[in-house]
Length: 140
Image 1: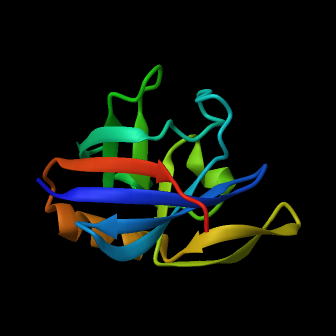
Image 2 (image 1 turned 180 degrees about the vertical axis):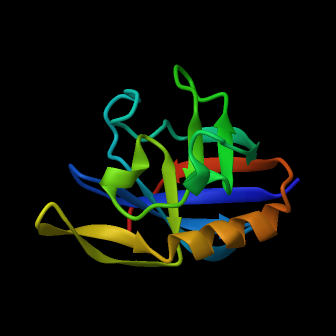
């Protein structure tokens, strides 16, 4: 089974940024909400090991290329999906090929870029199959 590892290295009141590794190889960046005690829709999920599976959402066509993170304590519906900033996360994990800054509500904010391409890269890596997810906090 393949492994995706997220090394969270930078967090502030708005977001948490991490490096994403596919079977030990650095590939992408992650964008999550900051830690707020695992509170639904406003917090990133706890560090730990998870299983992820392909997810198809008819309710959100823009998120058809997604993976669900299973067994998150006290949470459901946590996905890897496309998006760029805190306005897009909804408590989920966004992937990007690069880091940057985008304008949201009249001010520039940290973001991940090329998110749809990053999701395609995850899909090509996982090939639609289940994979392990390890999330850790590291200092840089």
